[in-house]
Image (cartoon, rainbow, N blue to C red; front, side, top):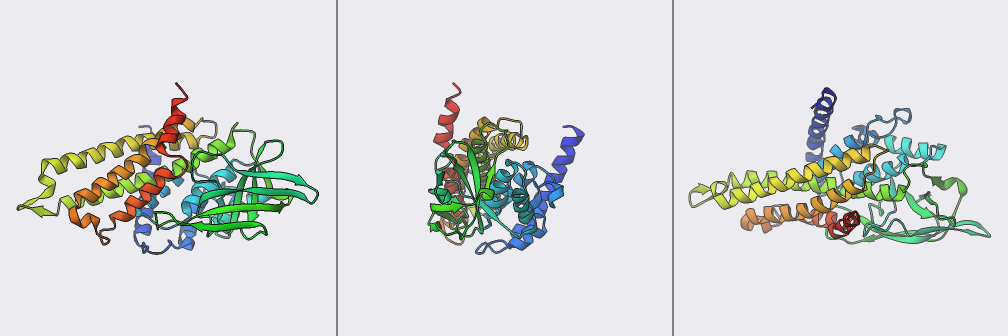
Length: 358
């Protein structure tokens, strides 16, 4: 490991420790205080220093996303900083884009990208020229944290087919946001519908010439964002299980001394170790604006989100009858891992995507 890599590893360890302590102090039944997250500087990690941010990379944001999954925390951080700040970074510089970034850093705004959470569909919104001006139409289901958003960034295609982002107030006339119930009660998803919404030209933000397919890169980032959450979930489940089997006694012995239990915990660790390698590669690819991140993102998403469901299920089994009780809290992690597996492309969809290479 080089000196630079060692310094970054130490920085990430310190950031993770601070995040873990802060998130552990928040009640699980309510959202983590957004003001506290803003004051901690987490919303501005990836934002340029000229706009009030820290000028870091997605690698630092990834540390927080992983800890949020480990705590199964209720927070729009994944949608706002994990996804929305990422899409803003892909846009051409403009006063409106810069204001959105600066507002996110300061806590004055919390934009959410209205991208469908199911499948790998790039977008379903269209901009159409009319006698009254530009109109936006379309819909997206299972948009992460849409019900509580104050601003929506809608990926759309113009009549020329070029992808753009439309920045709208969530309460704009003709724009509807309806909550959608999901298995994971720690997060909020909704359906966003645009019914001939009049759009001003200055609200249409264009992507930089690179990357060649910005919407695909946006979906890759969203997929890795929930993958990091799943990695945190699985690590929390392994820690909880090891602690439990080291304390619970059966037949006068700690159940962690039984060979079958040892093997089960070892299998969990092996799976998590593989996931860490895949996720690290995906994060590194997304941190480099010139790198092609599709393959790494698909590999990480397909393996890690499926693995997290298996690990949470095994943790529930190893906790015995206690694991199936409401008080254990394991069901919270299992449900969260289950939702992550479905969001932004199922493991099967990403494996199919990888198969195209061959």
